[in-house]
Image (cartoon, rainbow, N blue to C red; front, side, top):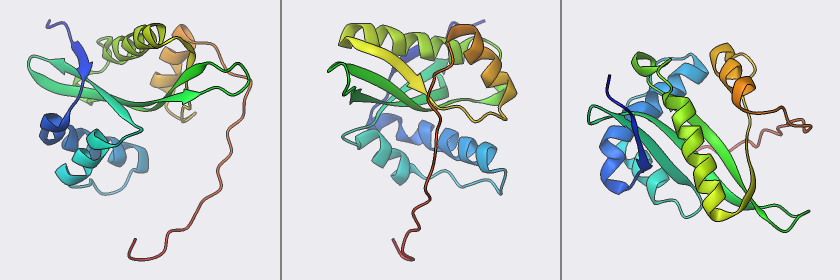
Length: 153
């Protein structure tokens, strides 16, 4: 078994990242599969606020995580906010998701983060099982106010 390698992704990785983004969106929305969109992947990789790491196995990109480095106003420190993490179904249950989270924890130690936090869809039972092994539940609740976008945006 090839040991997965975790690394920061750059613009050159958009071609491999685009299909994974499409698969993740389809898995979360349960709709028709999105077509891989390299332009969108490039926009994410070039975003000034988002950072993306990827997991490679056998020279193939098999997972990604998008995160943010944010201020924590109460302590004056910074935190890591994991926005999304995805591992291709053929590569799950091999420790890749855990390895990406461990990589972000190491990055947080280098940056002096207070903690790494993320929101989890409660229906994702396998993911929740992993997160309950490696993290502790937060005391916060999550709320969303949908913001309708104007057609054509």
